[in-house]
Length: 380
Image (cartoon, rainbow, N blue to C red; front, side, top):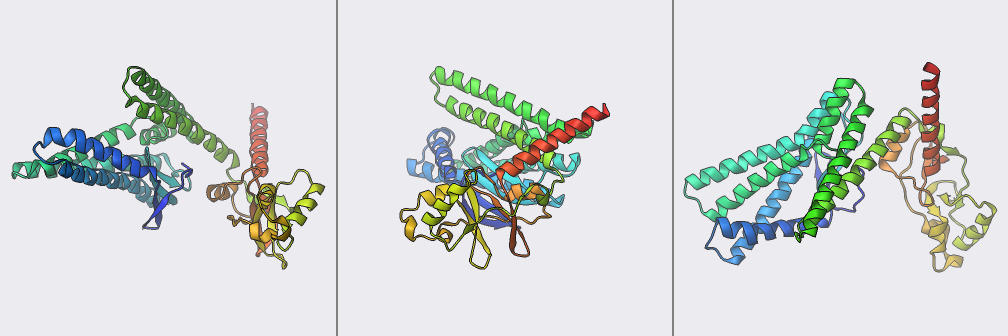
């Protein structure tokens, strides 16, 4: 999925950026509480609350590391098949590995999907074997119990992720199988998306029923169900756009020679000049020698307190750029042109030759759909 949450960078592993959203801390605290307050007192009685909490925090951190290992295996197997990996993020409801494009074949798709649950299963086996060995050697229950918990948690993690519903790993497995059986990748994506929405709806309904019965834990099922429904729908929408824009180059859909904002003008002067064109809302900003320095929107300029003494270049925002011969999908993958907020400057030889905006992408999507429908009607 695209990263919608701001994350704290945790470093890079084999070139893959790893980050964690602040909600990861909430997960660590909730897991630590469950382990320290409920699990350990029942399985390792006789220790102090401080000991339980210390081990609970360590168990929670170990689980987050195993979750990171789950996502890293997705990334490593994807790279093995030549698929780029943008980043890995941990957050409230787990983790996400963002790929630059789908795996190239059904086999690759299947193996990338299974890599994460496979890593969780291995972690469960290692933790279980360690717990068994320590218990046989007379190790303390305060060490054996959290290992048992970690093994069980990873079994649940692997099992839940294998549910055949997008965007879970099982949804990817379902997509790969349908793709392999039918030869139609888009059909596999549709089937997985429908399954994801259905499973999410079931979770939300079950969770709502638990809440009505007074079980506050049902809120987690409601939250997870809503996430699955929204994510599956968003993923299907993106896949439709991806298929429609496949092979389309930036030069074919960009707006050439767009109006620009002179960076040396004041914000007030440029806003007055904008009244000549009521439709343009976002502008690439250029320096006095014609070098692009970013983009600025009318909304950005309106928010400037002292517009009479602030240059446009001081308000300009840096954004990713594109090349005319670049696929549109590659640009969308690293930049998000949005109506009224951002455009992607298109540069050739360091000079501005056009912009790619949300309207351009929407036009390309609609014209591609119309052409494909026309070809289908002609062939029939």
